[in-house]
Amino acid sequence: MTAQESQRAGRREWWGLAALALPTLLVAMDLTVLHLAVPALSETLKPSSSELLWITDVYGFLIAGFLITMGSLGDRIGRRRLLLIGAFGFGVASLLASLSTTPEMLILTRALLGVAGATLMPSTLALIRSMFPSPAQRGVAVGVWMTSFVTGTAIGPLVGGVLLESYWWGSVFLLGVPVMVLLLIIGPVLLPEVADPGAGRPDLLSVLVSLVTILAVVFGFKQFAEGASGPLPWACMALGAGLGWIFVHRQRTLRDPLLELALFTRRTFGVAVAVQTLAVFAMAGVQFFAGQYLQLVLGMSPLRAGLWSLPWTLVGVTGAMLAPLAARRRSHAAVLAGGLALGAVGFGALAGIGSATGFTLLVIGMVTASLGISGAMTLSTDLVVGAAPEERAGSASAISETGSELGLALGIAVLGSIGGAIYRQDLTGSAPATTPPESMEVAAETLGGAVSVAAELPGGLGDALLATARQAFTTGMAVTSAISSGVLIALAIAVGILLRRPHRDGGEKQEAAQRSGSGKSGRSAPEAEFPML
Image 1 (cartoon, rainbow, N blue to C red):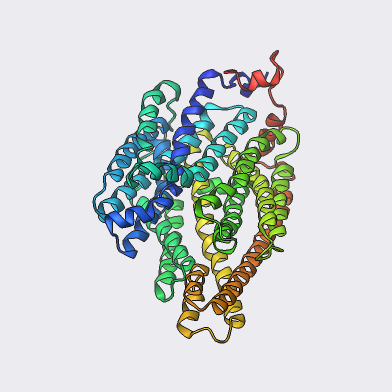
Image 2: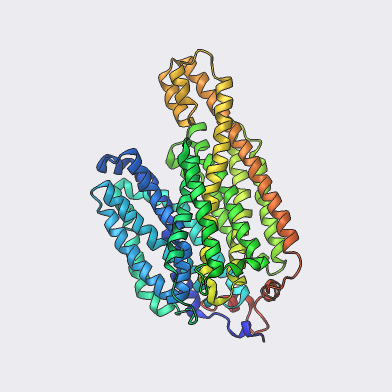
């Protein structure tokens, strides 16, 4: 019996995993739960357009900005302690957000939610690394963690819609209060305390530089995605790049760096982080168009569009759970590359989508892509936490989450900009010549603008403009889907090449242990993996 087999997780660890799924689900839900509440809060609080932008975006900004800092802090002071501190902060901020009376108060409380959320995500993943030393069990646990995140993101708008049917807009934040109270009660009982006793104090200058670096880069990408012109997006990107170089240089000189750059010398770790960043990049770009396609091209209501997104969400949950099981019978490289290739097939199918007959193709393509990409994300997350030393699990988890956040911002900005440019070019070249210039200017900005303008034009002209705009949008979506497919194909090939041989970072030992499954104990496999059953 190996050391890892003798340290297999028991009932307490599996119940602890259930406790960790709660904050993961809630943090993901808060990324999207506010979407349907925007009209109601706008009517009550009357924010300006700039204030509304900050209300919706500041949460994600500060999660991205503080992930590296909080992951490193958890390694130093204890991951359970940081998780419980974050849970308390998240609960209090949720209550304050629900009671906000001014736009400024809501922006501040959403910012506090973001800081608290940044403490929760790397702590949950790092604790999984400590609670499940067996690679086979850890793969399943990471699958559960990923399922919680995917589910939270998907049901956020639906939960928000249900609450808004009967309650005021602030009710969407109150979900966080009982969940965090429950975590504060059961966390000390079910979760172990893990910290690096040899870690030094965090370098405050590194904290500040990393925060501004991530915020500048993410803000710049979002400005590009929203079609902003002028020097601001470029200045943000330049500032982020310059501070990023300073941050990396400083980490090389510190005795106790905030970010352990040596982790990237492990090939398995570096490849896994690249997979997460680029896979999210590809998925985010296509999803950015898919929701608009359902509503603005096919004419569905927001609720109906949300319901039709459930098939690929549920399939994504299935992929997240099946990938660790498949990795026991095949190498990580084979399963990971296969998942990416399946995602490429799904997006490749969307490259042939049309403006009138694309509903079935959209569902098939998104279901196929979601199945493959969710499995790849689960395996790459497992590789990240497994390749890092246990004392650096918090930092490794934070790097993983930061890569995903950057991939999300980059995918929407780059692919959204490409699709938008194609839309404007096609619409300008094909729109009816009798379209008034002022109407054409609005229609060329977004498909939503085209829909509103078309409703104000005389019947025949409005219908012709709308049909042209929908076709131009679909063309842009098809091109970005093809680009995403190409990214995933290249990524699958790179994974197959870089991870096909054993590496000195210990990745081959992890794979061998994981494929050996439940060891040679006398239990049946399901009972050995899930002793709580």
